[in-house]
Length: 396
Length: 144
Image (cartoon, rainbow over all chains, first blue to last red; front, top):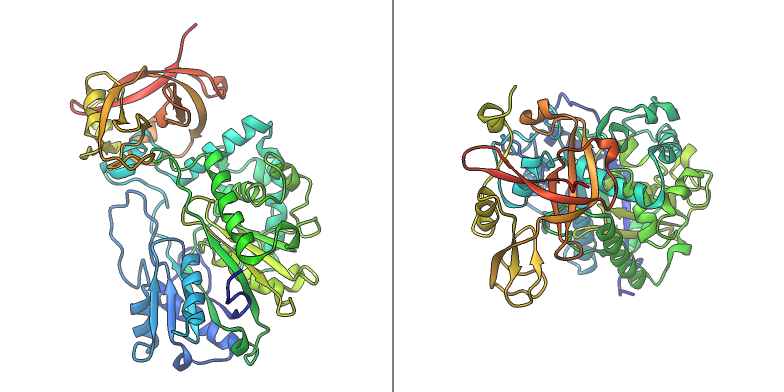
């Protein structure tokens, strides 16, 4: 149990509009999200003294580089746009997922370096197909994948799902309930990209296949947009506008995949188990203490792998749990209560953190799980650079 | 488009480096060679600058049997690069090589239909010359 468990809190949430192709540049959307988070908490830009993100633009063999303000928004640049560069005490920029930046922000506050830190993630949808290997050559790890047409992350996830299906006797049909209910959760999320567009099981069964068994509806929707969270001390947060959501603990994973293959089912389990062990050690809690789960769904099948890796259900039973509706809003363990990244849009884990905050502060509206006291958020696929968080109600 | 040079240049070609040259050189000769640690004798793929098992920098290449089993697969339905548009659906298999558990390699599976794929089925290496300089190790079912 660390010394600052429960002493740092999320005090504000801010979103820009999330659209497929924004008319305004990414930097403007980042400013929108930061201002919204500050306003949510009731503080000003002048009080902000830290900014943290992961600015990277995921590209696979893309020919064009990344342009500041258009494709990426680095914290030093955002700081200039906000006019905060004269008084910021720290900026953080990780090459892992942004949720590592969230951990760093909490530590910056715990150490006294900063008082109010914004963690943000701005993501841009490049023109054309999101995954299109335009380069003629493949180097590094890609030289063993791209020449075989194995360069798209959905195809990597597909090999996880195929092995899982074959080992345990499932098919895509078993996942339809989760996908449909997840989309229903999205209808109550004002930020949700797919709000206003519910689906039925046949939509999932007949969805356009990318890399069988991964269809378009198994993948989160890439958006132009930004989400921001304001972190401060719990003590300070109690004086701000919103109820604080306490950071009870977090953990990061370091288990790698075999180098020649981006991921395997067995390595995802091992990685998720490692993250879970570290999270339970950090918090003194266990799976039974969690009321809701915000489990990473950049590729939706990761949800059942996380369920198993976290020890919520035994291996091989995660998909049955979802098939039976136990992860739905009315189930035993409501998951991705705001629709996850699948429904809200691709924000690389900010969705899972923001929704955790929403649930433990009773801000969920029609998707609120009554009395939810603790939310677990997991980000990425369980392998190295994955993270997990327990976010708790102030009374806990 | 016929296979051959025109199609080939649209498929991403492997760019060999200090660690991987032994793999691609062997493939061009029609051999499957995998990096192996001289210290702990662990096989290692993809090749790296240090052994992930023991950290040794003393790594070399040794030929392997070219036999393996099917660990998992996907049927690619959307072209991930322009050069794959006339090759759909494309099977990518994860092959577990016979030499060591969890020694995995990605390759296209040839001479088999998607519906005939089975977890654990026996596979063997074949070689596809993509250009004069580049040959890709590929896999097909072991006959009989």
